[in-house]
Length: 113
Image 1 (cartoon, rainbow, N blue to C red):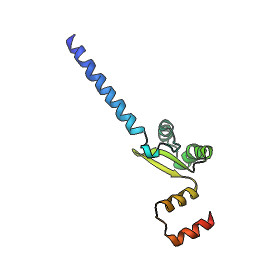
Image 2 (image 1 turned 120 degrees about the vertical axis):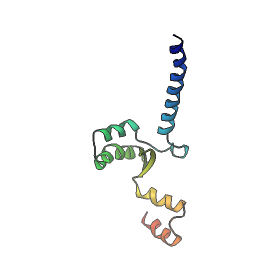
Image 3 (image 1 turned 180 degrees about the vertical axis):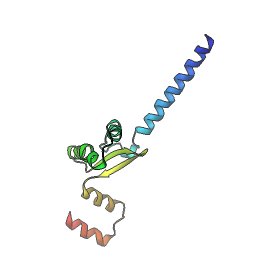
């Protein structure tokens, strides 16, 4: 009887720690939380049924990108959060902000936008 009562707090503690770990693992970093994201359960289901990447993008990512007009979608894959850039204008603007495109090229790209 005493053994069963001693195990309950240990099991409860392990369950709480596991829940906190899973929550931390599946919650995007604060810098990315404002972006629209694909639910992890729908991604897991897509992986389990063996859906190819093209079909997954058409079924999950593109509809959310079109619905939100953000141009980017956040996807959890391989243990990390990946930003899928759907709109090329968002990519070019982010390159301007981070100084990855030189000033000569910047003028050329700004004319095309």
